[in-house]
Image 1 (cartoon, helix red, strand yellow):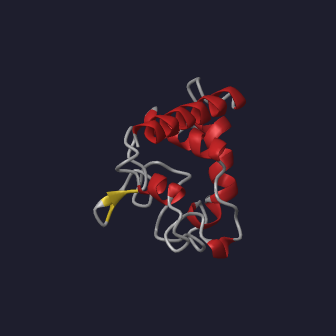
Image 2 (cartoon, rainbow, N blue to C red):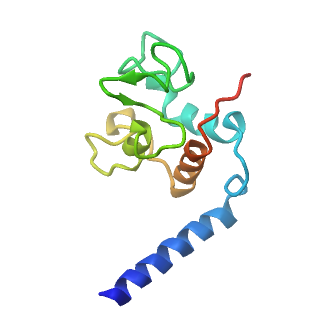
Amino acid sequence: MIKSQSSFSFISTFGMLALVLANPAVGRELSFNLDVRPILSDRCFACHGFDANKREGDLRLDEPDGKDGAYRIHEGSAAITPGSLEKSEVWKRIIRTDKDEGMPPPDSHKSVLSDEEQAIIRQCNLEGAKYDKF
């Protein structure tokens, strides 16, 4: 059992190292507009963007603040809690494999985030989820 755990740890470490080497954004401080916004724009903004008529769950991921902003507390949780993956509902939904709870949902016809895209979202959150102004 210990051997399999250490093998898993090695594989996980090796996998993260491969992501860092393959992705120039990982390993440096991210720019929200250059690194993160394109991912959210492609996968999330159709349902969680500027258009109030199409917005789901009263959540805007294109804005951090405000009554629908990503940092707001809604029903006891925040979509994004800067610096905390455990408290960020968006992160939980991105990595969830349950089709009914994961994001993006199957009926959006959007693909799930790749490992590289997940690494960028993860790093962004851990760096404080700083939104850039235009």
